[in-house]
Length: 388
Image 1 (cartoon, rainbow, N blue to C red):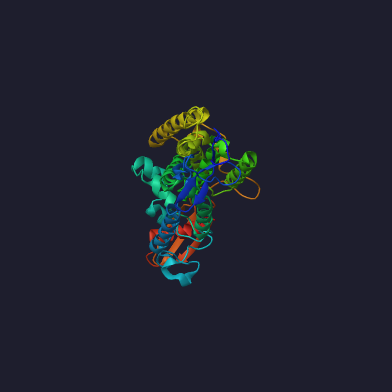
Image 2 (image 1 turned 90 degrees about the vertical axis):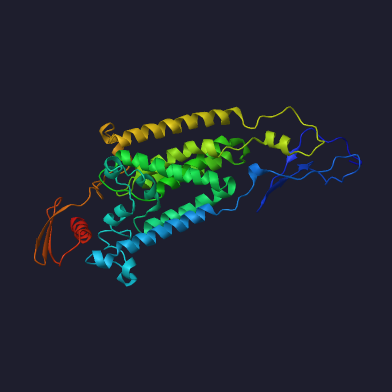
C-alpha cells in the first residue's frame, strides 16, 4: 500500500448478508485500501458457513399442514356423520359441535382414521407410521393457527441461518421424539399436532446459542430471553388436553440435535480460510473449538441411546407411568378449576326403531335421540357431547 506499512497479521472479517450469500473481505479499520502494484489485490470470496438461505421449506410445511387439515375436514363430513355441526354454512367442511371439539375441528374417529397417534395401533397393529403422520394433523382451526404462526416465526429464521436440509431433519426428528415420549406416557387417548416438532426448533435454538456462544454479542440477554420463552410454553402444557410429553420429547430431541446440526466454525478458522492472499496469518486454527466437539459427541450418543431405548420400550408396550408415579404432573396439574381426567368418552347404547338411547359410562347421564340408522361416528360424537 502506498504510504502505509505492511499489513497487520490480524485480519478482520466483515460478513455482509445478502440474498444469495455473504461476501467477506479484510478490513483495516481506517480509510479504504488503494491497491498498488506492490500490494496484493483484495480477493472477495463467499463464506458459505454464514450465508443467508432463501426459506422455502418452512412455508411448504405450513402449506402441507393447512392442506392436511382441509382434507381431514372434508373426510370428516360433519353434516353426514353428526346430528349437529358448528359453522354449518361451510357444508362438508363444517366443524363438530363445540361441546365435542371446542377447537373447531373434526371428530376423534376422523383424526384416528387420518393417522393420529394411537398407541394401541402402534404396538399391536404395527402402525409405526403414526409416530410421523400425527405431527401433520391438528385438532382444530385454533390449534392449527397457533402452531403455524409459531412455525413461521421460529422456523423461517432458522432456515435462513442454517438451510432447509438441517432444519428439515431437525423438525422431523424432533417431531418423532415428541411422539415417542408421548406414546410412552399417554396411552388412553389419541394425540395430534406439530407442537413436538416446534418445541424441537426451540430446543435447537437454545443449543445453537450454547455451542456457538463465542459469536454472539448479547449472549446473556439472548439466553435469558430464549429460556423464558421456552419455560412459558412448557408451563402452558400443564393444562388439560395438552400433550406436554410431546412438547418435552420434541424439545429434548431438538436440543440435542442442535449440537449436532447447528454447529458453526469459529471465526479464527474462517478468517484464515477466507483472508486475501498475501496477508500473513497466525498459526493454523482448528475449524471447531474443543467444547463444540465434546458437545457434538455427547449429544450424538445421547440421541442414539435415547431413541433406541424409547423405541424398544414403546414396541414392548411399556407404560412409563408405572415406573414414575409423579411424571403425569408434567403434562397436567389438577386444580379446583379443571380435572386431568382425559379418558375417552364411552357410552352404552340401545337402539329401538328410530330411538337411540345413550348412557355415559363415566357420569351415568343418559339421553334419547331420534335417529334412523346412525353411523358409529355419529354415535361416538353424541357420546362425547353427552359425557362432557
